[in-house]
Length: 316
Image 1: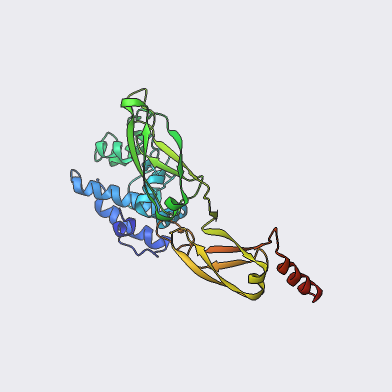
Image 2: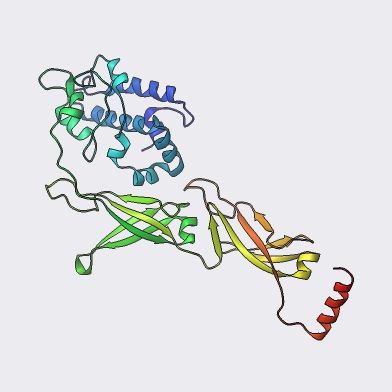
């Protein structure tokens, strides 16, 4: 779902514009005005989810960085609606969305979408007020099973390109194959969520979720520093002094011919822009730094020793 299109706002819309757009759509589609219209109920769910994400600075940043698919892997419906307060908006409709006491309302959900019980009771119930009260007063959902966390090793090449990984849950013939999409640019310590693949609920509720903890494996050639990569290249003292050209590998497999300026010092870094890792699935790439190391020969020929002594005596 494209949350910006759902609310009909620009991607650069400020919080006030987002709130205004949601207020207008919520007034049009909320079930107290469209009782029995399933299409309107579904539309109300979608605009409320979009508002819950775009009105929250952190969630909006995650959505903008990872896109709809990457965001959904990181946030469950419960996460999306946690701490969302719509009380001030719905008070404008003459609806006491806060229940008793009239205080600010925040969605509460024991698993799944907070709309599940709402649309079963929307538009009715003793005491009036429509179905909005069922966010708090509906039947308590059965608790879901426990979440499971497993480590998922990936390579630097998979960080560069993204891709799909398949893991086995269980052993033998009963093992279940689960596929998960790994977004480009992901780093160690991040988690991918696979809904409903955790432990089953002991009381018949929904299963828990599976969280895959990313571990980026070391590479034989490249060192990762954030979104940048470092590759070490050794050159002779004469090449560093006089300048030269060297071949530099890239993570994508292509080799580049790079100029080393005369007088390059040990541990100097040459920057190759845009040859690093992507900043998120849709972001630009970091840089590749070539770290220059001087290669000191362990053995010299007689002629080489004479030449070096001459250089030493000349003050070089």
